[in-house]
Structure formats: structure tokens, C-alpha cells
Image 1 (spheres, rainbow, N blue to C red):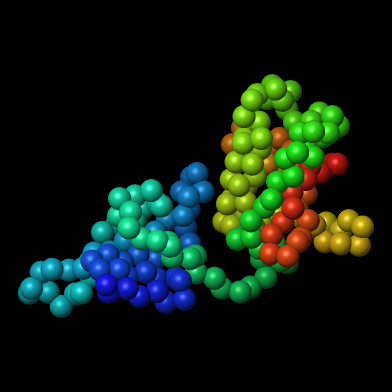
Image 2: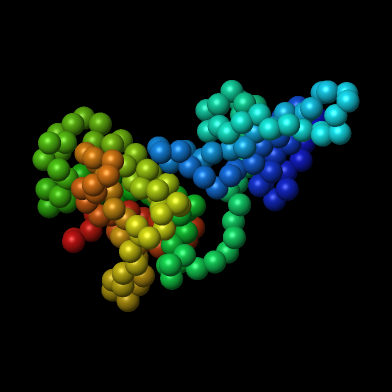
Length: 179
């Protein structure tokens, strides 16, 4: 097949092409620009713009892996947080410790899917940090750098708690903040 991937930022496969715009939907899903091969014989254009879409669009059904977000190395508000790194939420420690559990809003403490809700809220906060790096607050703790990430569990706008993110080797370990 006719396949091209320039450093993972642009994808061409058969009759389709796409790239990650660096933009996100209101639910923090990546937005891709999609193109199709131009089949008009009297045109000099090889491709035409088909629209913008997120990862679940039929336009991207056969694109795997999806193109990466373009990366331009620069300091982000003086913070070297890498939002592309995954966050491993220490769910057992958070929900298994009575003091930590008390930090969770009371109206959701006993819901059966609380572990999933917590991990999903952290993932949404990580996605938000990609487009709003100022939500991340660096802090020193025991002579190490860690970050505070606001997490929204009951309201998509107002954070319910802060998660501390300890820097590991290529990922962050998330625990609840004492603040």
C-alpha cells in the first residue's frame, strides 16, 4: 500500500491522509485534519480536505497508529511537565486508605465504579494539561520535583482534589495530595 509517516506526524495510506492538528475537542479528544485523494482528472490537486474529526470518526477507521501531535520543544510556562507521559494512578493506596478516601467528595465515595471514575478523571486532567499547561503546578517534596494536577470528579469545571504526580522513568505515579 501507499503508506507514509513523517516522524509519526502525518499519515498517508491508500486513499486517505491525516495529521494531528494539535487542537482538542471540549472532551479533550485530539482533532485530526482528514484528506482524500482527488480523483478529478482535470485538477492539479492530488488531495482535497475532507474535514476535521476525532479518533472515532469513520474517516480514521483504518488509520493505525494515529499520527502524533506535532512536538515543538519549548519551556511551557517554566514547567517541564510532559503531558504525553502516562499517569499510573495508585488507586489501591488512594481508596484503601481511610484518610485518602475522606478527600474524595462524600456523594461519590461509595459508588461501585469509583476506581474507574478516578482514573478517568485523571486521564481527562492529563489531556487538559496538554492544551492548558498552566493547570500543572510544580512543587518540591523531599528534595524531589513533583507536580500537582487538579482532578474534577463531580464537576467538569471545578476540581474536587489535587493529585500529586511523582516523576518516574517515562511516566508519572499519581497519589492524592495532602493539600
